[in-house]
Image 1: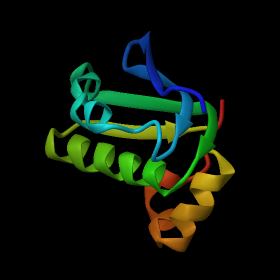
Image 2: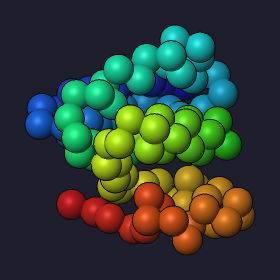
Image 3: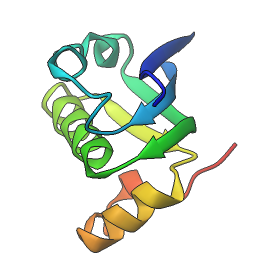
Length: 103
């Protein structure tokens, strides 16, 4: 299990490093959305996510809701295949947030 870290790359770009799983996402992670207020356009790179499950998808959905409420544009890139599969099963693959975007 790799601890979840959100690394600020500057200018609204962030990298998620570690696992996006039930065991790594805690109440503090869910409450710490302040990084989503740092710019009007936020990009979250998921290329360094090593393992994920439905909790990772749930967290991404919460990020989407939060940024919509705060009128911030959010995009994800390098979404792991596991998350894309979960998004497809949930019907979320049709949204612009889950389109395949890589470097």
